[in-house]
Amino acid sequence: MLKDKILSLLMENKDAITTGGELSRELGVSRTAVWKAIGALRDDGYEIESLKNSGYRFVSAGDVLSEALIRNDLRAKFFGSRIEILETTSSTNQYIKDRAAHSAADLPEGYAVLADGQTSGRGRMSRAFASPRGEGVYLSLLLKPAIPPEEIQFLTICAAVAVSNALQKACGFEPSIKWVNDIYYEGKKLCGILTEAVISAEMGAIESVVVGMGVNTGDVADDVKGIATSTYEITGKKGYRNTIAAEILNQFEEIYLDFTQRGKKGEILKIYAGRQYVVGRTVIVSGPGFEPYEAVPAGIDEAGRLIVAMADGTELCLNSGEVSLKVGGAKQ
Image (cartoon, rainbow, N blue to C red; front, side, top):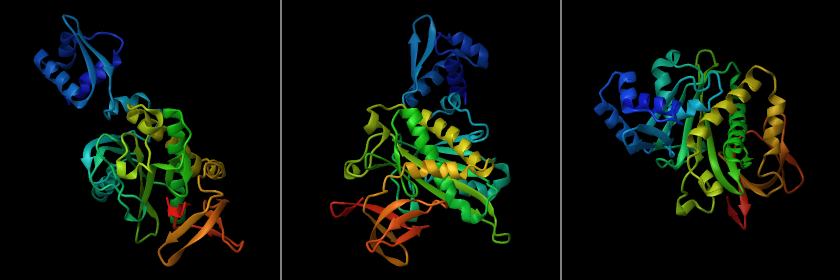
């Protein structure tokens, strides 16, 4: 689109003034078309300064999702090699799964989809994940790992470490991880992660995996302020979305390769275990097929399972299920 081309040119010269005539000649369009495109960019939320009898200057992206701005910070080689940004979708995971069902071979590994908002965002156990427009980084990735199906959950662990690394680098604070797939900060949920795999019925092998990450970056709704937070609540600043998206891609690619190619699973687990939020706290363990019970997490084992101590002193290793922190008799 013309406005995207103009945005790229203005960003390339963001410390200088670019005249309407220069943009017109470079792109082969009229000055009126340039003026209209500048107006459309401003409507999207970009700050572009107009200097009388001089030209235009890029000031700020505000908090608008922008492929150009994401690529400015992108160091990953194949995560994000293809990026698609949607205004709204049901869920970015579902969007990739639907695309892959029709043309999986045409979609490269590392294909990334972001949405400004989701109408049916989901977490584990089909729980709804609130995804209001402009208030989060809703990002999904298509992966094609050569790993056995029983290793799929480890991709969630990789994603959790990557997101926590990315938030620390992009926003300057260190979050924690709540087994198995949530990112927390000071007792409140900041991000959820959902990993979904497509398994070949004939071969029993993984065809593809979609990993979705939803990071809260804006205002937190009043009804969840007690249990949820956002990068805005933590830092008092907005405008992080493109930087966070780029850094997630950077961090996740490195950790993904550490797991799938470099034999560094143990190092990833050590980081994951060291950031666990629930270790040493009383939790309620729940899941299908059994009654909820209280336990105290003691750590993470070599398979990424949560080790929990029961009231009688025995220990269990959880491969699935849900743990909720018990706070004053209530679950969190």
